[in-house]
Amino acid sequence: MSKPSRATPEARRLDLIAATARVLASHGAGGASVRTIATEAGVSPGLVTHHFGGVARLVEATYDHVAAQVAQALEAAVARAGDDPRARLAAYVEASFAPPIADAALLATWIAFWSMARADAAMAASHARHYAGYRARLEALLAACGVAPARCRLAAVGVAALVDGLWLELCLSSGTFDAAEARALTGDYLAMLVAG
Image 1 (cartoon, rainbow, N blue to C red):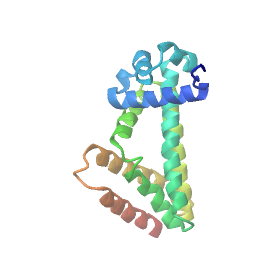
Image 2 (cartoon, one colour; image 1 turned 90 degrees about the vertical axis):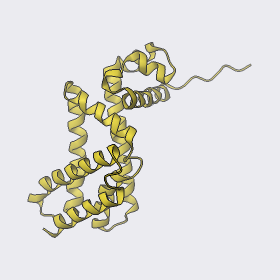
Image 3 (cartoon, rainbow, N blue to C red; image 1 turned 90 degrees about the horizontal axis):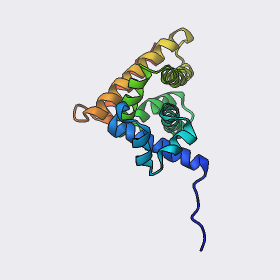
Image 4 (tube, rainbow, N blue to C red; image 1 turned 135 degrees about the vertical axis):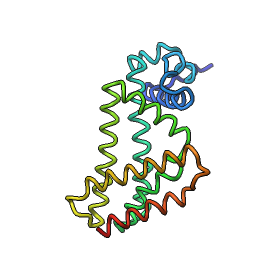
């Protein structure tokens, strides 16, 4: 009889991260305890401490993981758009209005992250780093479309704010408008920015 195989440390870490994202989505920041996460992952609470040193580090790792997944989805949309700079910019923006980004559970997870970032310096630093990367990517895509360098930073801030607001409302109350309307709104705004 063979012994059951044990998960590798990296697989166990990813399982704990996925469980943390589910707990944050269903229970919010206040429900993210070692015991709740361990129960969700089907492991002993000691494994959270063993792999992450505690719940705070696990939540930070979850933030990084979820942000990386969102970034990968955005970049995949850009890659599918081909070489045209305007199509690439539109694809990057419009990807926020389709799965896997336009998702109520992802919104709930982000809300938990945002609430934690207001009270925890490490989470605030993670938030600042990820949003800076997002805005920098928008700046590069806008510059490739001919937006003047002096305008790129604020243009990226404006696009990010528009996308975040539409994404939030689309996930919260999808009956107000649909993804096609969100794409049309952002398309009009992008056209205005590119036209100067």
